[in-house]
Length: 218
Image (cartoon, rainbow, N blue to C red):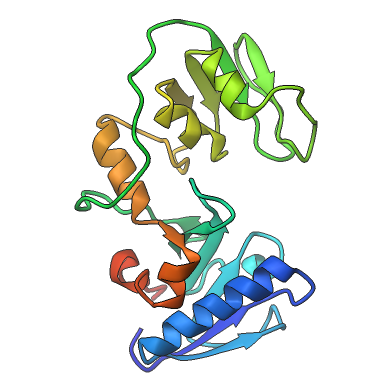
């Protein structure tokens, strides 16, 4: 990021954002970056750090923006981190080994479940549906539902990542989904691991070694 100015946009009314902003500030400063925290979603800078889709995302989704989102695993001690390009996450490819969850053997059955993201309705053909827990409470856990099925269908929900790890065949119509186009599960989970970082790794600045450089908007 060089000597460019960086702003971490933080909704100070949300404790988890305040905590994460502190981790990001510490890590970036340890690497010599000119960075501040702002409670103004419109605060200007050369590079923006945005947490989630609600506070500052719409203002800076087309800029040089580092996007902090729900972890693919290890939540709440971890988060996912990606650069944005044209408002979409950029996923790393062909990365070297990094610690990740163990992949379970692939299932061979045909029972399917549709996994909905928040505010989403299921599409197509499926045997069961699981709504986002903030939208509709379930009497079963995600782990239980995945165990009872062999195929997981959805769009961008991180529950599809859990499904792929648990050995379900995943199907998505969204090319921006974290499970889009899996041909080699071992390489897929390895690449995804370079987006999944703990608070300690963020505070130390270690995450900067893995995520690469921002994409230019010019």
